[in-house]
Image 1 (tube, rainbow, N blue to C red):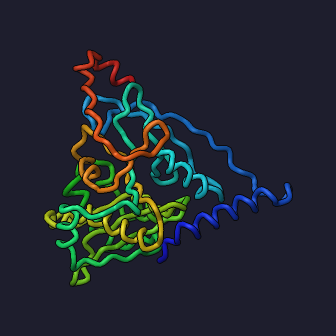
Image 2: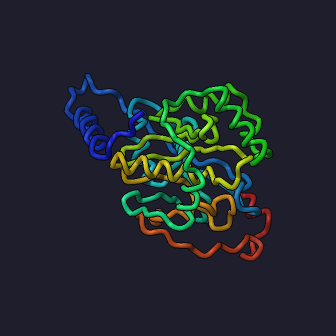
Image 3: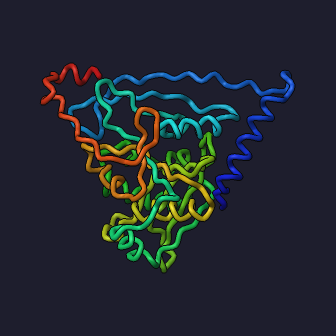
Length: 284
């Protein structure tokens, strides 16, 4: 499966926009009304003592892919048929990050991970679920995220996550020398690169850093296709789960609507240190 070059994707994007503009009014598809809404506050899954709110929009209609391309550059992520970004009151801990492929060069750490996985090969496939993928997914969830909602997903749930996207998606499968599936990554195909939506891997092989390896593989795929970015979602200074993202070379962050070179911001003080009561935090 081909990612498509950056130039090709941009040409297709502009052609679709021009066609929509010059088509007779009666022949133009009606653009769906894009209504953004904020979710009610819930406990933050990443930083204890804080509340999480999101700005959400549903991805519907034939123009969803074009719309999502722009949303990704604005720091949004996708979950099923919705795009979202944090909208927490008094907190800006979630920092959108992406890898600038053209500026990427290996470090001692990434070379070590690359060398540890020389026998692993990757392949980009259409977004289709398989029982083999689901077995690995379920094992990963039980080992790493047993208390999450995803740990209770059935094969039907997993299949829906992969096969019912409103945008262009694919699955990257990673197999060892014995052809055993050791990692997989659901990705969205954007006009300026890829967005790593969700990755999972064999939890019995922690020394191989397969999660990081899958991102490195995507970087090389984008480099070969002339695609400039790999979007990684959010980095959070106070979350150990997100710490690995800061170790990628050529990382960029979105701040005040502008993508710039990544900097480690100072961790925000806890609500207790800020003098906020628990009731106020729970209210967002």
